[in-house]
Length: 161
Image (cartoon, rainbow, N blue to C red; front, side):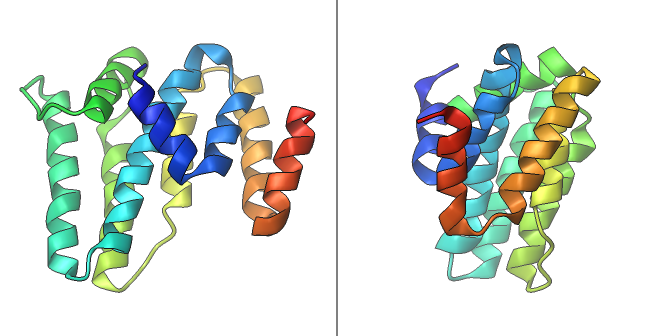
């Protein structure tokens, strides 16, 4: 895994970065790659003033992922290289990526849907055993139900620091 995805996730979505420590080590880098993609998509509605420009950018990401599935050449990007590896390793259904992109498109269209379910479904696709999925689901539930100021304290308790 490149440091790009890890640094991006750590700098822009620290609580989810810490959440990756609760998945098996063998899939942790894959989880970081998927969450880094989410960070990239998440910043589009926040940074753009023109919804059409944001929709074009999200379409670019969707098209690049589609190129990975067709084994065509995609744009050079550290995140796309990692996503390609994750797709090849775990055989993730293409529709899960489309669902994630669609959530961010709805935000730009003014009819927002929560992208959390989509990113968690995508992350769950790389967890192959029931015990790992259950543990990750419990941590996600706690992550989503805690107030923002208590999330950091809770993660510190989980980490024992």
